[in-house]
Image (cartoon, rainbow, N blue to C red):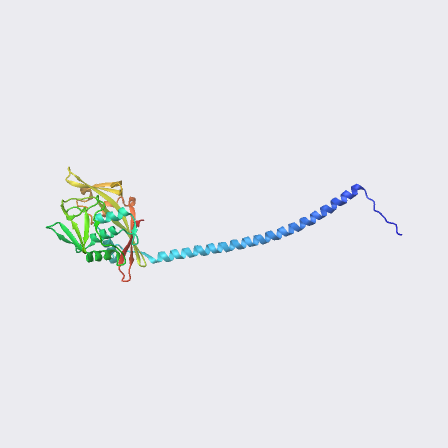
Length: 315
């Protein structure tokens, strides 16, 4: 029988051998971990850089598209001369008497989808050409068909409205003065006829709204008329036997008060001629125009090429 041999070592030697084995395993494990992490980082960086390149490419394409669209839009938009035929026809279309203009500003903003029925009728009545004035009875009448024609001339034939009575002047500060033009009450509607009761007033100037055309922009079938708006109060001065005109930036329709005084002129300073509601008065606001608010009237062409009012708002 073979004799078994035993390797004898001291305790210290055994401990050292165990430590060496543990360190060897640790180094191997660390090497594997380092290799794996390095490859992962490389791959991650590659993916990150790749995504970043794609993102930058997408951003560049979006910016380029937006710039092209802006250029195309700018190319389509042209500023019209205020004296050409289209401009003059649009300016004429919004040259309402002050009581009707005030009604639009009181509302502040509208389009053909949300315009109140009474405003439609008020504007239609103001621009109607076939009103009949009966001086002996102080009445003024307009047929349903003539009202429809007037409204169509302003808004086109697609606007829906209802024939009914309405108040002609809903902002009493701004009303026509003189002759048989004043009607502070209700315009009645019955049997296809609108009827207003008039009263005979005196002469003189009353507060009015002045709109100065700033620019007119056309883009395809859409035209925007930009106006600078001044609210002008009038006061008769006994000492001079003349009127004084105070220009304001705003009018508070809730309190019926003028706000933001900008300038005050008398007839002599203005040039000794009356400031009328329908007159062009560039001199009046030339020095304060930069302080005035801008409003925009929007028109769109129908199939026949007629431009109809489709909206109004502050710019």
